[in-house]
Each structure stands twice: as structure tokens, then as C-alpha cells.
Image (cartoon, rainbow, N blue to C red; front, side, top):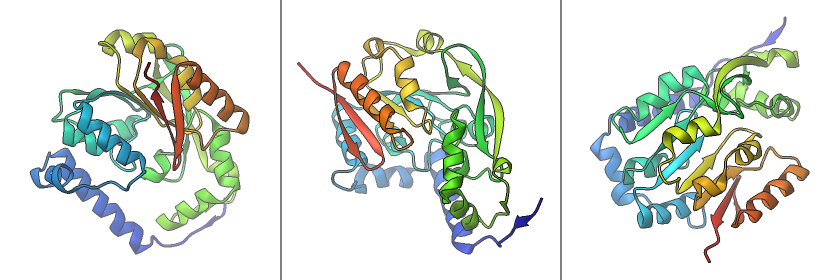
Length: 269
């Protein structure tokens, strides 16, 4: 097999170290780090963070269920509010290495946060998760999906190559060398809610790279009755976008697009 190789670029190296530094501050519950979000943080108006900031200030401590938590830190829309406002919730992350190295470390001093090393599926068991084979960095682990086609599309449109080159990686010439499958543990909605559903969750947040609608359909929204649902439709085809929006609307939610996310809020009588 022939590879094209470029050296690791310095901006990637420095950015990685800086993010690791911030991660360690958060994991250690550093008072200066927490004070920034408590006293100085100002989200961009109209952003998802602006909505969550206001919602958290009104309803803290918010109870939440997060499906597809990854490391719980980089690009995570709720991390700062968990730390600042002492949210209580359950976080599912199926990748064992990400779960052990990052997620449980991040919240090790927060007993109100429960992390589970499993994916949500229709039954308890195992399932194949498709991952980027050439990197274990956050950009790669964040693309892991049950839907292999999502990763293939990112290869075909060149977006994976751009990310890999920023890291200075060897770029496989063959498409099949980009992706590997890993058997991961799964937990059913019933098993999950039997353990953790104590009157429902105020916020449901999903990031599963194209599998978000399947997660929404698995969960009994009438049972957990979230006031807010956040998910992504960027990896949906047009048919799935319409079906998911219709499903959300039937359950009494208004929705709007904010960046790459869909924000659905319960319509009050």
C-alpha cells in the first residue's frame, strides 16, 4: 500500500496541547477556569450556546441525557454549563478508549454525572461502530458512526483528507483503508431509563453522526418529556430531514436551525 505523507503542522500540535491544558483544568475543577464561565463568559447572540446559557440560568441544575458524548469537552455544547451550573445527567459514549481516557476523567469529581460506555440501540448487546482508522484524535473519533455511508461520503468530498493533512498523517490511497469497524456495547432505551429515568430529563442532546433520528425514534419522548431537544441533521438526506422534523412536531415541539444543530423546544399549552 502506498501512502502520501506530510509532517505534522505546528498549529495542530499547539492547538492539541492547548486543548489538553484546558481539559485538565476542567477535569481538576480548577477554580480560575470555572470562574471564567461563572463571571466572564458571554456566548455569541443567537447561538445554541446563548440559548443554553439563558436556559441554564433559569433552570439550573438542569437534568439531561446526552447520547454520543465523545470526550465531553471539545465541541461539546453543554460542557461549560455542566461545570458552571452543576447539571445532573447521564452521558453515553460507546468508544472504550474515548470513554476511559477522557469522559470519565472529565467528570470524575462530579457524582451527579453518570457516564456509560455504550451506545443506545433497540436491545442490549453489541453492534458495529465505524471509525476513522488512521487517527485517534478528536476530529476522527467525533466522526464515528453506525452509518458507514456517512464516513464514505466525507472521504469522497475530501473533508477527511483535509483534516488528516492538518494532523500530518499518511493518507491512504484506497477508500477501504480509511475505515474500520469496532464491536461496541449497546444498551436499550428501556434498560437505560429503568436505571436513570427519575421523572424524565429536561434536556435531550444527541450527536451520533447521521443516526440522530434513529435515536429520537427509539426513545419514548412522552415518557422522558424533555423540554429541549438538540440534534444534528447535517448528515440526513432530504427525506430523513422532513421525517424527523415531522416526528418532532407531532410530539409538540417547535424547531429551528442554529448552525449545524436543530433546537427543538416543547410548545407550552
